[in-house]
Length: 426
Image (cartoon, rainbow, N blue to C red; front, side):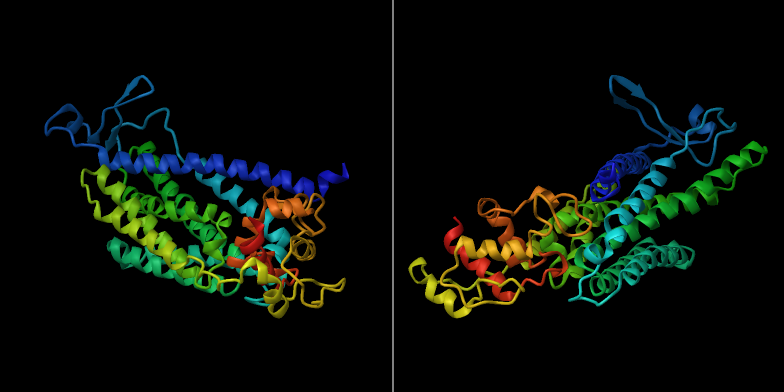
């Protein structure tokens, strides 16, 4: 039973909460995409028709799952309050709550490993968590305040201002927290804006409409308009948030020297692509938007591509080259020993054992890890050779591993791994 209250139990908690987050996120995003599509796709009824007379502003016929559907949208509200009215809110609330729980499980409970990079900023765990929580709260307050100004009447201007502020937050976070933590907190900040829209604007506005009808009063259309604006904002926020949710799998983005700019470009591409679909649903096909998005993504891929390493010597002369330039082994205290005779698998294994295997092992010794991240174990030479390409990418090209360089892998050791991979691993 003790195992269930240690790192192993935390991993199960991580799995179950992550699963819940994925399920509720699909439900929330699916509903958001559907209703924006519906708003853009409905067509007004003919003037003087029964639908027009009862206040319907648009309707749509659709077929799905073997049945026909005829959704209708009223200009403000129907004449009578329906007895059975469905609300879309718990999808949003559950997504944010499960996401917030994941922040605690993955990042805040293990802030020293997951949030702090001493090469970026020398923070304590408490300071790192405070930065994270402050980002969520501060992001919502700034966004909500801007939405209540005259900018609300200028969607393009407000969107541009928000994009600049989000990129600014990304810049600050990538210069304060580790790359992964910075990215995830940009996403969590945007997700907090989205759920704040639902909790503080959309649902309260809908309640005012329903309450007015229940009292026999004419609902004020302003509440519906405000809710619609925030709903559209959420729609454009979605693709950037989804990108950030999966970004921890792609170190070439968050480990780049200009990771904040990389994130800005990819988010901009997502917004452009989302805008294309929103216009298309309204009957306007503008291929320039997705083309621009694809070009932007391609440009990022080219810009952040790892620079080719300097040509290494032919295998026959590798020994002399490495002996002159690379500290290949480390002693029991972690100090560089005499230069190696060659970049051999055994010398690489010594480095990996000391710098990587505290996490990537069948029995991790690093606090907070019950199993090897990603299932990658590096206990034996065979396993090191099996995962040679991953080791090379993460330790030599991206240099994001070891995590926050907690085990202090040196440049000489990275060079050893690179030389071995390029001359012997394959």
